[in-house]
Amino acid sequence: MQSTRRSVSYSHVPINRQQSSSEPSATARIPLTYSSLRNMVTAEAGSSSSSDTSSYTSPFADFFSNLEAGRTSLGTTAELERRAFEIQERKLACGVPESALRFRTRSYERSVLPPYVEAGEHRVVVKLAVKDIPFGSEREREVFLEMVGPRHRPKTDEVQLSSEKFASRIENKRYLVDMIERLVESSRELAREFDEEEKSQA
Image (cartoon, rainbow, N blue to C red; front, side, top):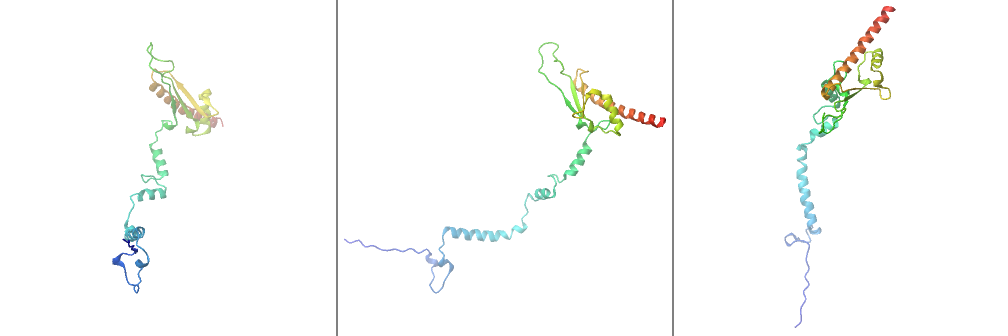
């Protein structure tokens, strides 16, 4: 027996799309592969969606508009937030802002032996920068520093006061705040008396 061989040729163009040579077509010249079909589908989808992009509104539009305008997420600017902070800032009777006071305490574990309290446990230390005290004149500042004495640190220009007069940190803290208020008010009164005395002598 002799085996016969058949030569079979496959065309890239489907049978239903084959056309005569007299009618040239783009599909007849370019084979339809998966990548070309994918490009056709994506191109059609892109053309249909491009018409809808004009009416699309991003959910982050407000966020980016605030970012470009220098506003916060709440829609307020840094200047407005600073003014709001100044309005909410509480001050002492002498005009010193409470945020300028820096307190320091020390805690210990509870002792099992009497008197159950460690030395210096109720001691409270407060620091205050002199620049945060609203003096009316340079004389008031000079009188204040004279009254404070060695509690003023010239290197840092801060005043440091401490108290352990009471057996409670809260009471010592109140005592220090009251002491600062009395010092500032007294410096103002003394400075005013000095000015009046100089005017009377002149």
